[in-house]
Image (cartoon, rainbow, N blue to C red; front, top):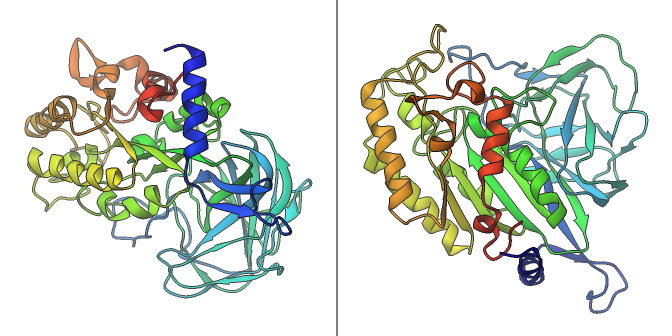
Length: 418
């Protein structure tokens, strides 16, 4: 397909996209001044867990008189932005006493909610800030400070941030230098950044587990496979959102609700979603009988494939394309650690059966064959050494880049592509 045809295809897609739009006040029809809000960055929420779980939470269950300083990289840029505060899975109202956003603390501005710097977020709900006039280019890294003066229950939690965050004493929102504090590898409360765009949004969502969440990638370097894919699509004005949750499973709750349970909230609710890439099944197969789910039975391959059929059906009802990704190999996963046990001959047989179904059933709109890409051809039950992070379960930076580069853009956007 020529570049000119691809550009025409994308232009038609953009012109016809449904969108959340906002007409500027004073514009009778809203046609010339219509603005659209695009989700440019996203971190799906997951429930917290107790000390009896095999992995530590990595963050206090309750916070008081502290500032949570978090970093992120947006995809698409724009002239104004909004911040989304999540109290999802919270059981009590959350009071945010202040929020500051900028490329660093010294250069930013304080966000407001209905004109006030404080906001109370109902239990289980989210709050969206007023528009913040702060032009940001695509790919800009932001620092967001969130001050909690009163005791707050941890919510809007995301376990593997792949970023360094800081829990700072007192009100440090917007203060460039702060002494003390606790270093974190988790996220909380901040769940999305919306960017104002003159064009209707076109969005691709990556739905998955820790391989999509980026476990094994270099922290703070934006080396997850959805990060690499986002950089490929930014020039075409397409947003890529990472809806991966470490420990996620298709059929059952894990370190978060099952993908079937969270599909509407974490995928379909975003404005302008045109495609979702589904990479799931590793934990459905690997967890049962191991340390994460010692008393569970291994599901049949047909149970997993029926779950995929449901996701595809629900996506197609909304006009969303679904790209099915094959499950990468994981022999020797986490071997020599307290978490080993993902692999067995029976589990490998189930993985192979599911992958053959993904390739041949014709249920998905397209297939991303990550299994063939990442496996060692001399021992196809294992990851290739040069693409392995070292734990034999997660790719490293090079593996994640290869995954993103292997995705055909025409599969995501129909008639468009590079």
